[in-house]
Length: 375
Image 1 (cartoon, rainbow, N blue to C red):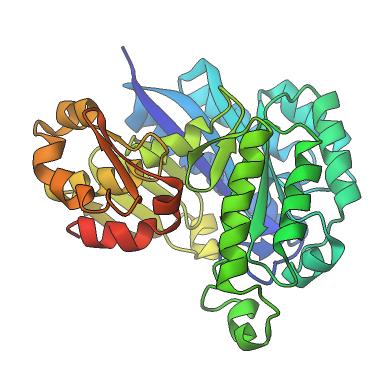
Image 2: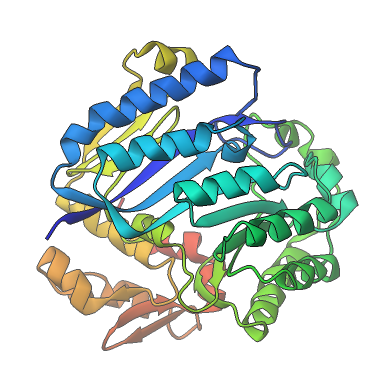
């Protein structure tokens, strides 16, 4: 049986840069720089395929940036390079991130014909004032058209990203965002709290941003969970909700410490016992220069702690039998007592099967895990 592998392909181009974004992305230049980058990506995919003869690829994720900002047949061509040089399973999940656009119909048909079967749409809000404050350039009518065009092209697995704790937002406006989005029948929703990152325009104007207070943001999180559950979306990870059977298989690889290979600027990998990541140097990548800026072998102790940290993000948490099969030791002997002390306060559930956060614990997970784990 082949080992399973996920591939991540980074497309760093966007139509414009949002005010909160610290991802590796650039306003899309015209013509040659884009084609040169895509040629470098294809070269990289071909070169690394020699390392993957023992693997079957079961997820491919095109992230960014905005992959669907690429012109013409560029995305189908890149996917063709993947399928020609890797053993891709017949039921692989193949995702592209997408921002709402008025020019989606022909592109979605071409993508679906090429083998893409999942879209992740960056919505963030349905309210014009909130979108403008984020620096987004779409409207909710663009979102509606995107979903209509995607369904018409044959996409049945559609995810939408939203944000809470953003400028001008209230608990009521956030719930309206979730309700209006759910009416478009996505199979998956991600709800992320705003993080103000150093180097972004939001960081420079942080003291002037009309942000909701901590109590309002907490209400958004818990009331949002309740609303989504009532609409048939089960919370399976801190920020992720899905109809049954539509959990993101690619992201589950990250949260389960499974292997994946990343391609492109700022892409990261966890492969053959090593973690490594690329720099953001676009010119170096295009020219074929070495851009790996960090590479480390993962020790047994570090992997144990990382596994617990990431699995605890999931609603089913750490399963003791899976932990023991992977690491050859008792989960309860190593971590049980540290987690159990949070049980009385209602943050953690510990059973014979393992341990998991409650919704309250998920909201405070970073603080709890920093106490529980040895990094």
